[in-house]
Length: 360
Image (cartoon, rainbow, N blue to C red):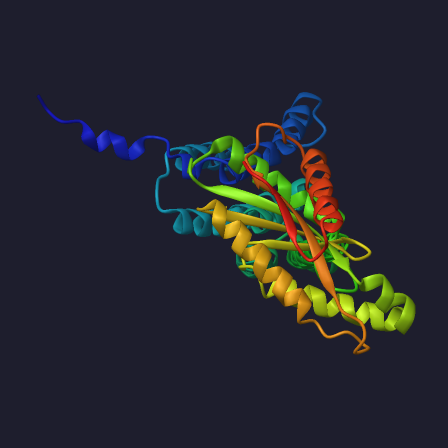
């Protein structure tokens, strides 16, 4: 049996369909008003319609329909196809201007729309190509046309319109895209700023809540059954004496030192937050052993104890409440924080500078 595999080269390719196909279909729409006018002019005998004009209109329609098939069946590679289309979109209207004379003024806008469409859909280089080619070919057509040559001012205006308007539109759209990107960057920066504590640079309560979304998703997926996470809620012991006895500036400096100490006790994948006042939250991810959580808590207590106070008679410590996750009784962010808060106050009531842990 003869193989017909060569037919597969004409099969529609997904990459060829989309904006390029939309541009190809738009060419058919471009010539419709002109064809409608030719029909009405012939029917009502408004003016004589030269055979060359009819042939030109039919030729452009044929080109538009053929190019829809060229795009749909991915004939030629994409770059060559778009380059040819950009050139033909200018060459055929220029030929029409020469053959149809003043009657072609009805479609004098077609080259401009072709340049704009190609540029916005495929890239600005196609607008530059269309504008340069179109301007040159249309100028030549007007120069040698017996009719257009008699009104050089109008002819020049049409050439400039088809060259400058597409370039202006594409440049303007490019500027709008740049402004949109800058606005999105500023919005993202503002949103990020609202999730961080301005004093310490750590996450704030809202930012800390956001990281729990990923935590809950990972707990539900349970990709690694033995992997656990832990939430530590930490309240400073002795901070009130520093803040009241040495002033708020000294208190703020102490909080910044604590934030730096906490960040040094955890990994880059963990999250540290200042939840308010002298209360901090820590989320430990990807922990393989329960004992590792206790080691981190001990490391934190030691680091806090080493934070220097403004006065030698003042000492800083911490009480920590720990919830190891997943836990069947803790399903929401609020439940986890309440449980960690209760454990933290148990540690504080038990003598401070220690931790209490709820096992998974």
